Image (cartoon, rainbow, N blue to C red; front, side):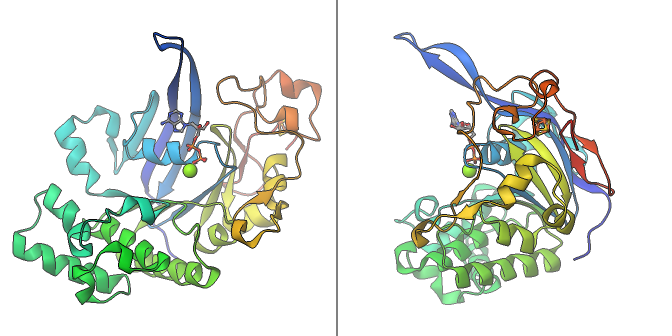
Length: 326
Ligand SMILES: Nc1ncnc2c1ncn2[C@@H]1O[C@H](COP(=O)(O)OP(=O)(O)O)[C@@H](O)[C@H]1O
Ligand code: SF4
Ligand SMILES: [Mg+2]
């Protein structure tokens, strides 16, 4: 798993807020700070795993990086270009290089469209292929993701969950992007199907020099595919390190809680885990003062409710932690 040193994606102090509205006039009364000051980079060919409880802002962060959601402030640089400075036409062009793979191919694949058309649609939108080429490319993409070329004529309902996720991947790859945000792409699939897809994603990454932001609930999957992992809590990154370092030597109390979470007994909910933490995650509308984790942290000291801990390098190279006690 070789990566080059130069970053492909640089996220600098990114904030994305949603307005909270109330009353008959639906006036804005507050901001829901889904992403509240995130900075990191992803090197070319690297996979950064992103973990954290549901609602902590992972999807919003992924969509904001791709400018599918307009960030409130901060910058995202892709291949050196500041995406916030591009006009609509330039951004559309840049989008070819950055794609998103969604969580639920049951809702993201149009049931009324043939699979070949779904896969070739991005080429059509970007006017990058003639009519004849569209079908050829769709067939080529299907083979690349381990399906059969002739499946272009079928509808999504004729495929299993794992096959649909392969179709979703084929669609994300059609434009030959260099960066893909994989948003929890393997949720709801059987363990054996997940393993096959992780292998496919890894193989494609190595073959095509792809860079991934890989968001998932399942820590074992994140561990298998990621070079580095970032841990998100209530809109910010609280810890980031090389994968083995993070799983073997977590320093932030929240990361430790995540890693020691116990699976929910119901196999249908095997992606969910019970965190051994007091209380629920606080609201991103009014996050706690100081360290946002302090109301649930079992080692908090007085300072934790007053001063915000910076994300700083501690111990081994590239291991960053935002905790006063680390
Ligand atoms: N379109 C939206 N409008 C308003 N609030 C949103 C929207 N999307 C997400 N949120 C809120 O932003 C926060 C982060 O959500 P999300 O990014 O989906 O988290 P995750 O992917 O980690 O589960 C949550 O509090 C969620 O309710
Ligand atoms: S800064 Fe304080 S409250 Fe936050 S994680 Fe560290 S010890 Fe816990
Ligand atoms: Mg999400």
